[in-house]
Image 1 (cartoon, rainbow, N blue to C red):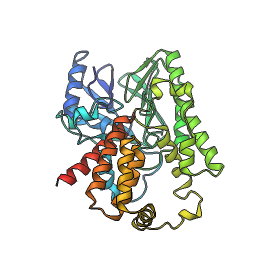
Image 2: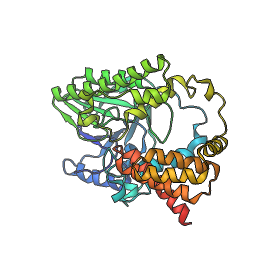
Image 3: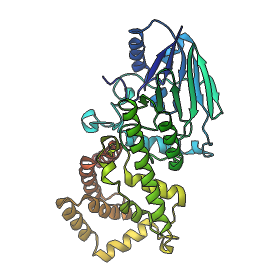
Image 4: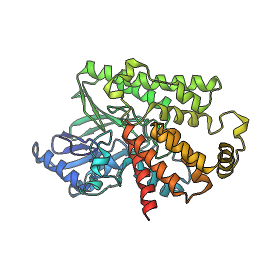
Length: 395
């Protein structure tokens, strides 16, 4: 049974419970408390955050009556200065990525699990700051008779850790592995995720030869052979995309050219836990390109481009005017060439932001693309933006 978008784990120690993450909302964390109570009446005296994402810390307040120590690691590299200046746009794009304003029928899946509690009437984020923050790379703790190895494991986040419980051969890996192609780049935006370091972290996970792999999302992997095979394929698939992207860049290919050229080989693409249900290979390639090379693709035409509206005006004029473009959009949508249809619609919207027909066509194209998209994040973004356009037209 799924209790949350994210997973939590707990270890029953001599006199207390050690909790790994706290689910995504206070109400769902209360359900977690009830689940723990089926196994023990010992209090939760230790909480360990695998990383700082709110869907893993959102239920912490439900456990504060036992005054637990809350353990986390500091990021291995600092957050970019003035990142808070982008809070509004990152929140806005996050709302689109996660489909917060979409219905359950429109969302279908989050890619990683069920929808968050805060959008299903099951509580809110109730995060509590850590009381112990380690700067070290590795910490060995004996917590109420349980030996745990806590290791900095940057990947999806720079504060990510792995938690190794040697007595159980159990490895909590946070979000450095989950059962689909990961967000090597999140379309909501954010600081570059160092994919080379992520691959190194996966090497660390493999080296433990765990019998139980307990990820921050999706199902656990059980059995040493299954864990080794899964993590190795996951690691090798990501490493392939990174290596081939860098190779294409070094050959002078543009970002679009590399994104078109790099495909995950069938031996990995056919694996269910590398399916593009959350991130995608193409978005990963683009994220790597910008992370290593920046925005300039080497073509001097793009050093000082025309203003978007000016270029759109000139292009529309060359195509024969607005009516010709509208006809071309209709033809594109009718022939299911939806991407071309929204590209043309953007030309008209750039020259006239009040162009209702262009916006109607763009919404139609976005809806169609959303229904074809395998990534939950991409589907949400397409559908949410389409609904925003339609709502604007009604207003």
